[in-house]
Length: 437
Image (cartoon, rainbow, N blue to C red; front, side):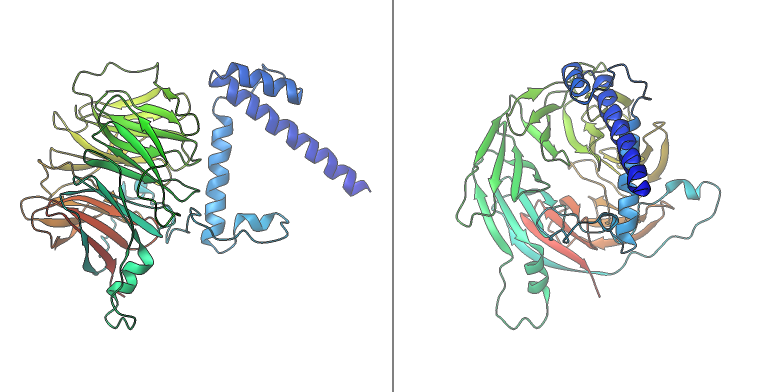
C-alpha cells in the first residue's frame, strides 16, 4: 500500500509538471486562447514560471534517448508495459545505421577521411521530359520522381533491388508502381506524408496536390491547394498536420493540411524582390525550418511562431542558394549554391563550420545531400558530369563518379535508411544507386 501511495504522489507531481509545461509553451508562443483553455481545464496557473522553450528542450532530449535506445536494440517503447508490440506500418521511420555526426570533434584533432563504399547503378525509368526532383519516404520503402512532363512516378524500393539482381528468376520486374497525371506545368518538389500513404507535389502551376497511392487505379489528386505563386518547394511537418510551401514569394506559405488555411509569418526580416525560395525543409522534430533563397541567403525559422530566428545573408554570395537541410540532430544546416560551394552552418551561431569544395554547379538548381549516416556529402559537378563525394567531417573530397547521365544530373536524393540514392537527369532518365555488397 505504501509503495502504491508513493507512486500515486509521484504520478500526480508528474501530471502537474506536464500540464505546467504545456500551458507555458502555448502562452509563450502567443497561443493565448489555447493556453487559457488548458490552464482552466487542468487548474494550472496561466502565469506559471517555466523557462522559455523548456518543453521543446525536454521533448528533444526524450527523442534523442528514444533514438539511442532504438539504435542499441532496446526500443524506448519497451520501457512501458504495453500489451503488444507496435506493428511496422508505412511511415514508421527505420533505425538509422549510425547516430548523427558531431562536427565539433575535428576542431582540435586530426581525423582521417573515410572511404565512400562502392555503388552499383541502374537505369530505372524515363520521363518524357527533364526529371526535375525526387523524394524518399521516411521509412525508405518508396521513392517518387517528378518531371517537366508534368507526371509523377512512384517506385517501390524493394522492387528496384529485385530488378537489380543479376539472376532474377521471375522475369522482368517493374519497379514503377504508380504514375500520376494531374498537374498542367512542371513538377518542382515532392514529399511523403509521415503517417499515411499520401504523396504531395508542388508545381509551377501554383498548386499543391495530394495523391493517395494506396489506391491502385488513382491517377488524379484527391485534394488540391491552390496557391498564388509558383510552388518551388514543399515540406510536410513531422506530425503531418502542416505543410510549408516555398514559392516565388519571399515568405514561406504555411498550410493547415486539414483546413487548407494559409498562414504567413508576421515577423519577417527585410527581404528584397529577389528572395524567392528555392528550397524549404523542416527539421527532424519540426521545431525549425530552413529556406534557401534566390538572393543567396539561408534563413532559419521557428517552427511554431514562424519567426525568422537567423538570417545568413550572402551565404552563397550573390549567387542563388539552391538547397538547405538540417542534420538529424538539428545543430547544423547543409546548403548548396550556384557559387559552386557546399557549406555547413552552425544553427546556434550562424557560423560557417565546413566548406566542401571541388564541384562546379552554376547553372542547375542542384542539391547537396548527406548520405543516410551523415558521414558523407554528395553533390554534382556540372562540367564533368560527375557525382562528387566528400567526407563530411574532414571536408576532403573522397570520390568522383561518372553520373551515367547524358548531361549533368539535376537532382540527387539519398535514402534516409540505407546506402542508396537516386539521380534525376536533364536527359529525362532516373538512376538508382546502391552500395555494392
